Image (cartoon, rainbow, N blue to C red; front, side):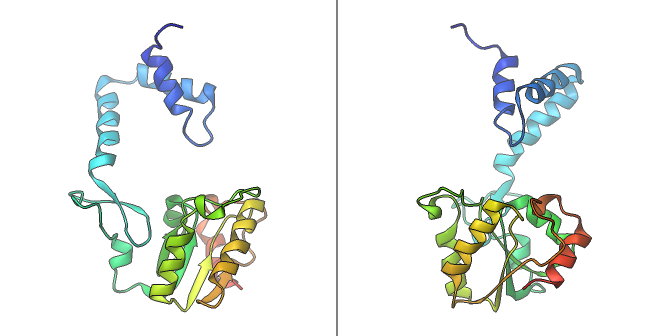
Length: 202
């Protein structure tokens, strides 16, 4: 077996992106080949900057921009540090992109990023999400309400049920109300739909 070309190696890397198949991955590489070297260099520099100018919040696990990455890795994001946020409400989401979308709905509480959802057949659910970290935060901060803002999918419902059971007795547990259609992901819902789902949560 011969050595893979840069085109093949980069295509294989793009295939690791969520929802990207071999054809799309190859299109990305072809695009990079035809754009100007300056733009290609800028893309490469911004990818490198992700490693040096972003940090993961020690409280909510959201990735956020920083001027200088802390040497010990511990840092807190601007949302968690904002004194004007409603500290008594914790919105639990699957991924960072969900926070970006929820912020446009005028939600003013805090967040916690689970890092995924629990597969239906998972024997050890805690290995698929930040369950221990969420429980620790709930026990430490004792928010008045925890909103489980997970996708309206079968696995999202499964994850919601497990978390609701684990968090029972620590806070009021609520889920997003009507507005999110079955099968939809929070990342792709429009701000008005999220606002509606928040106002009708139960």
